[in-house]
Image (cartoon, rainbow, N blue to C red; front, top):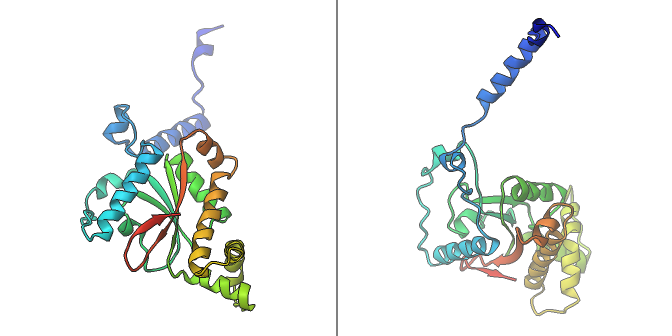
Length: 238
């Protein structure tokens, strides 16, 4: 083979592709120092440690001794990446803010919110992203006292109430929890249905294939459920 055959052919298209590659590389965010040094990610903790961190934060919040008050701290570092240590499936209720309830800063929690704190396909995809891409070791399904979405579902199941627009899709997602709670004939149907809604969604996430169930089985991910008391600010596992 002649020497000229060993020389790369820099065609116009080839140069164009090289230019695109160089531009893309330049656009990539620079990794923080810990990543360059090979250190573990800030959220590379065990599921149990993540849960303990949430519990300690809620204790501070309920006691009105929260430590996270300067939300500008770490803003520049957060611009390049995020390392949340827990995902929260929360109701959209305006009286519940997970970052405040667990006394965590921006970038600490990966929150999926929908009225009634249930998981649909979109929510599942978001939680898969958190677990697989971001390395989140813990998912908490968080219900709350006096949930309007659960209360509305009870009215549909017990009284045959109908709601307009797209509200029936929300009702249908929560209905199994209300029916299961009703079968127990509890003294407080709303409280029991709220807890049952949490339990059913925890079970769904624990067995969600193909991603979350494998992580749970490997001990890399834990899924738990809890209920937030609006009046006291306390979070209790169910």
